[in-house]
Length: 541
Image (tube, rainbow, N blue to C red):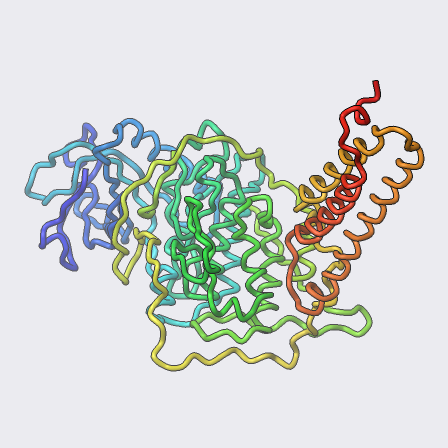
């Protein structure tokens, strides 16, 4: 059921009341709504106060959920209850840097104090009031300088608390990390909001998947999510801080002639700032990889942030209002390039679609599973409606992240960040010559197909008759040895020129495998040309 405020309701000051349906007289006037903060596809959000014997509390946020007419109400109640249970649990765990839950109840729609309440009961959630702006508003309207390092570290710490909780408590997925769900307070501190879609990491709890097209990972379309789904959301926030744009887009721009993006999910955005800085681009794409296994784990995010800082200080980026702190310490002659310090992780509600460089490369190769069960199947997608963004002055923001355009650019020419004289030497020479661990198996199918073709042709050649199996096997073994040598020669050549000289990061060995497979096919064709295709010579009996 959709709340339709009148023109009076939409003014800066309201005089509506609401509350739980219970036996006490006047319970449905327990909260007075004073201001509409925002409206999203699933709820309306108000600033409010709690009333008790005529005395008003300090401001709180009241979130009133809408019941969708085309979905079973019981299903919606269960979905809301799961998110509320998770947020209540996080509050009791003492989770930091999140919007805290105060109360929750079922009640009828808001009404004037002199009116009787009417309508069906809908879910209410009472949350702490957070003055501030979401990231899109803060950067888009240039409301101040943002500490990008602190913001990303805060999100990483929140995810660490959710994914790797202490004391044997159950891991949790937020499932909707995006710029609109990060609130920047008056002191510049960041907090994560909107746990409506949050779920325990359990197949019994994840029956729907929150999905925002411009910021969420493609695995939601397969109904399989895990902690890496939140890591993708983290990556979308980092992408936004660097570029001022969403990480994924449905635009067909910047594709090769004749190329068309046909996947159901939005593709990664090719931003001009990043295309001119390929090392920074590749680093930003790590947590945004289409395949969840290719992303860093939650525990690896602090190290990823350290390397991002180094990349930013080496890249001529425009000033979007984000500060990235001092550059990393200079290299020490006795120990070589200075390694970034790893920050220790802290232990410890918006209209979204709902669906039923260098050292870091080597570190990701040794990936360890997050402290949660493996991914599991969830029902197919179910999409909720879109909504308009929330007003600029927000406490508890309720807005979608469906804006395709970049934030309003500044009127003046942006000044590029200058390279610091203390920036460490370029680390291109640190790239593994054979590529990151695990990359050589990607593209193996090409070598396998070529080898299989050669083996079949060799077998037919042997079956023709007067040829020695021993000498033929020795020649085949020599051929395989040459093929392996060709493969490693290609990888080493690529490591020198493509990896170290060009500074690119090699995610796979497809080109080397393709050329090796081509070599094996050529050998197989050589056997084929020597085969006498008379049927009698091919049948040894």
